[in-house]
Length: 259
Image 1 (cartoon, rainbow, N blue to C red):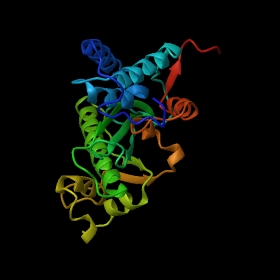
Image 2: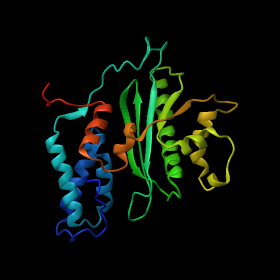
Image 3: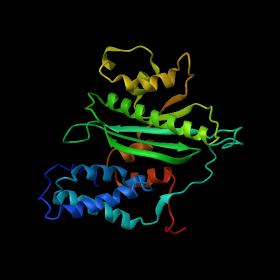
Image 4: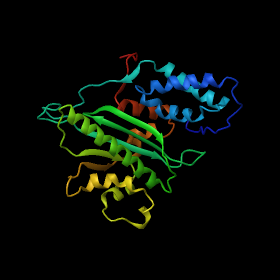
């Protein structure tokens, strides 16, 4: 999808065979299991399954053209040097890190923001998500904070899963965000007037950052520049140079590319 594209409910003329569009988007949904680079585009196309128009079909064909040009692109799992000696054993641990981002009011229909996050274990991508938020955010800080809360829940789930598999991880999980205000709200224990409208469950991240009497801190929020935000590809359409850069950082390798 082009960065300037904003798909609307009535984009062009109604399709004569809507089942054709639904079958194509359904197949693309399965492909997002191994191709995080198309997750945002497929999530947008999935919103028009009921009554697709010609503009939606053109956008879906553009995704197909992108896939045809990169048939061998996929995630390569390897030793990234992010784990200490003895990692993935009962005596060691694998480092867990996550990137969260949000496109504030990116949906032209409902003005809801889009949450995007990706989780790494030992430097390898293991989980990602691109989804429209359930409520309208009144500020970019609120939308970023909701994204941080979502990736926090995912990172906690990944740590518990690794623990069941015998991987002990006691290090602070690193959470990278490009919004300074959201990081400040997560670290500050005082509830300000401007944060009262945020749902209580979003403040889950504050307990994980500051810690409680029962649980010590487990999340370390770190500010990162927008150009290095890997979750950016999960929140908005980007240009080819940005897509190639982020895919490389996500560990995606084209097995058919000349060496």
